[in-house]
Amino acid sequence: DQQVKQNSPSLSVQEGRISILNCDYTNSMFDYFLWYKKYPAEGPTFLISISSIKDKNEDGRFTVFLNKSAKHLSLHIVPSQPGDSAVYFCAAIAGNKLVFGAGTILRVKS
Amino acid sequence: NAGVTQTPKFRILKIGQSMTLQCTQDMNHNYMYWYRQDPGMGLKLIYYSVGAGITDKGEVPNGYNVSRSTTEDFPLRLELAAPSQTSVYFCASSYQGGYGISNQPQHFGDGTRLSIL
Image (cartoon, rainbow over all chains, first blue to last red; front, side, top):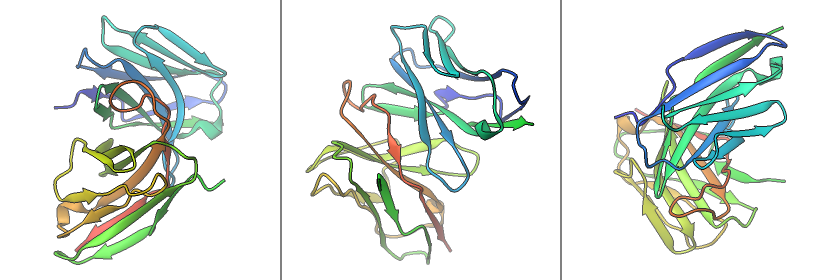
């Protein structure tokens, strides 16, 4: 029962262009969402989060959009940089439940 | 800044052996977490703690035990290692926030890669 799905295992983008990473969820009780980035042999690092009462949150090059009716969130990275190449995980929280997606590998080509 | 420190980084165990994965944080965070990540999968929560002396089960607690005697340390114990416990284990910590599991950003260690043969 995958309550948080990242349906694209990988994404390749040209440097300077927009990267869009998607995440779908099934549990309508999720009320907080976070994105983490992970480099090989390191732990995940926090990128950006959004509460379910909002539909957009922006931090520099990173913007997260939440569409509650579609149970869908997306992370936009503009402009993409080679250093953004990593695995991106979305995570969702509802009370004492915390669920991560399987991750999307982003490759930014220079 | 040390942040979250996990030891060891790598370990090979035989089936039936026991071991303790160590995790310590120096950020004075209330909340601490243990995850496992299997190949091609997301992180799955094993146990978490909201403060010293308080622990609770996550999604996949079977085969593991935890304790939280201090704010800084949150060790994870495997009593009878099984091949299904071969994984990469991550410890994390965060400030308190929200209800239940904290919605504050989690700070992760670099992981312990555990193989059970």
